[in-house]
Figure 1 (cartoon, one colour):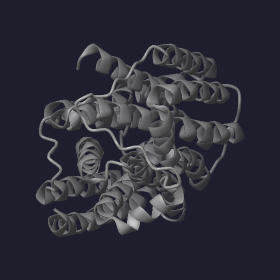
Figure 2 (tube, one colour):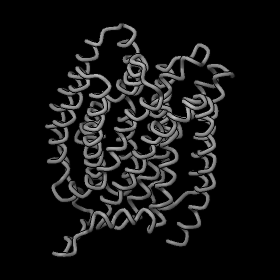
Figure 3 (tube, one colour):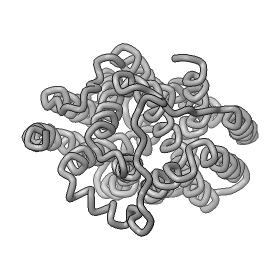
Length: 393
């Protein structure tokens, strides 16, 4: 929490503030314009699908050119995307989501790789936890602000807020600095003609059992997170006295609080902790089932689901990211970490793209029950992970 790191965390907070607002405004505006859940899911999912696609290239380019040079270019592209939202309709939203997806792929990789490279191993999990924490702080206020903008009926407020965020993020980002930990070993320079093949890296998702298991857990959980982000603004109206802003605020607030309270409990030893991961996936499954049942059970289950979902979200990502930062080969770590994070992006995208048609054909409640079943299946997958990890160590 020294000033150089705190400045990076504040930059993360500013960058993700726009998303906290857009995640509510886009579904509401889409429904207002007559779009189906499938169409809304495609627009929302385009963001993370694009992010997923560019993650591995982001990791390789950052490894080659350094995080700061990449970061400054990306902040310009992000600013253009935010401005595009202010004067276009659904078609423009899709283009803006794609531009934002490209920006986020490079932004988050630059920040996380910079943090990992700058911190000693014993503090690595706390650094990743703080990064993730500050990315969720906007989710406490953003949804409520978005609903206030929507209910006020004046999209000019929306324009002012987005342009303000774009300018502040760009100005603050250009002053950020990242320095490597000089005590840590650096990857050896690749011999000429033996550079790491980007396309071959995709095969590591299957060939490397450690990466495969972590990626499957992250992918499945992210489908649930994506379904919540995309459709809660629409589902909340079906829950008696339900409020999407309160739900999203509770979930984000729980993430932030859990990250602060549990930051030293996130494993940072390079070992797989099977009971810890199984309990996390159980939290996720119960959270999704509470959300599903709330349409008949009431707002108590709705908001309990928000809290449990936030706890699962707070634990899962930093735990898996920190674990992989230890067990992946140092030479190709950045690219492989990009692949792992890409599975999280793909899951969030699928949460909108795949679950949208499910909701259209059945109901939002049934769709969230499917999410709960998916989370429950991953409890078994987390247990199997322990056997693989033991063999590898």
